Image (tube, rainbow, N blue to C red):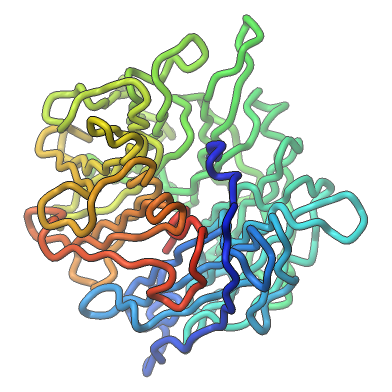
Length: 480
């Protein structure tokens, strides 16, 4: 996902010392639950603060981890992890932006989810190459110990780690890791298992640009065609006949050899989610394009749009993709230029009815004089697919939501639907990286049989968890 100009500014930072804090200790065998770093049966959440000042280095960045419990995320059970943390490779450097690329998966097959950080801006010695991929290893006491991917390494390391996604792409029961570079011809599949020394079983390179004309900017893993192998959505830019560029996506389907196969092109965008929104047993692809309609962004729509391309046994259904905007019946608000609807996306079943729902961030939504304050809309899944009917909208001005909407908060800059209390319903986590003049904050919303609720919602910041004060963009990325 491209960063706006504001994301490149990291001024007026203050120093802060980061240390790893102890997490809850599991007392039984690891749950094997996706997103569960300490194996206690509850999903956990990783929160990036990529422009925080660490050890005096502006933009070095850190990742906070909040652990799930029977009552949901517990901010007293947390860790703060950076390159200043004991056991983490590397040293804090200005402009590393540690944490601005994250994914999760059980890479070593021990039953604990691991957290993967793409440190794509980090120079590799004096070679002119850049980018490391750091794995923070899960365990009974939480994330502890880390390794950089060490071998086999790809031919190109031009900001390696710019794009990350984990899944079992070859269906052999081991988690694999897909890693992209910036403007490099190959997408790399590190085949699992990956050892705690950072060694993968093998490496497969895929030249997406030559095969499809689409470069690799963002990748999303998920099961679309129901064959038991994870598929991979590759999102990037495609040159048009006129020489302009537009966003496009292509679905790569998993295969036993680990060499994913390119399929049909579909709607582009800058974020996406793969989930079964119509409960037919196949994953559906939801892409978000926050840009308004223009000649080079034909999939946009006034103020942004999300497009649903339905999955099927062959990979993609013949059903016509469905576009949803803020002007779709049932969706609160209305589409206006620069709303940013579709900037961020996440999938989860918020009411326990078996249909995946979709949270959509519109982080530049404006309320009168409150410019770029931001909103989050939750769209419902149904037997007919994703729908505007019953959609709910949340902002800092929603009754019972803590805080007050202000200009350039960017509420909805990241969203995450995740079941952290293991009750069968996903709660909404939303962030505003611009809150507090760039310090950033995160909001937690509970879910009931009626879906996400504003009542009982709460908010916290990086300093709540023991992170440094000052500009950090806490919440820029949510993963777990």
